[in-house]
Length: 148
Image (cartoon, rainbow, N blue to C red):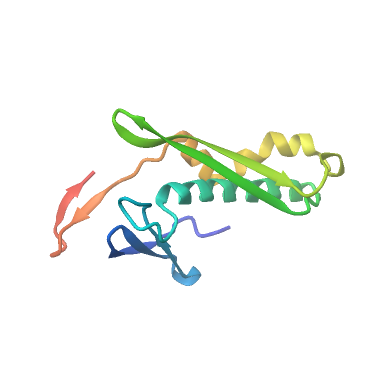
């Protein structure tokens, strides 16, 4: 099992473009689409959709392999829409579509797989339940100027 704690760092490069550092896994550029940013990388909404779809695909793979099945290839598509809620942009829903490379009939215990796999997905279950996010803001001297 992965270490239960994790950390990423990020820094502003320009305008709304950030470099996100995943440590040993390298860096990724994130940017807001125009008119705020220049659209030079995925924005946080797209990364949330990607994390959700990736986790669901991996959970489905895990559940199939748990019963010694071979799904062939697995692909996923995530769709989200932004909507104004209380005057602010939010993502009220994500839709994830998973595509197997094998037929359902060829997969052992597939009805059990379908009953279980979503529960293995850390990201989806966390998003569904809501995530408490503690926030600390420090100024250039390191002084905490806000903490929630």
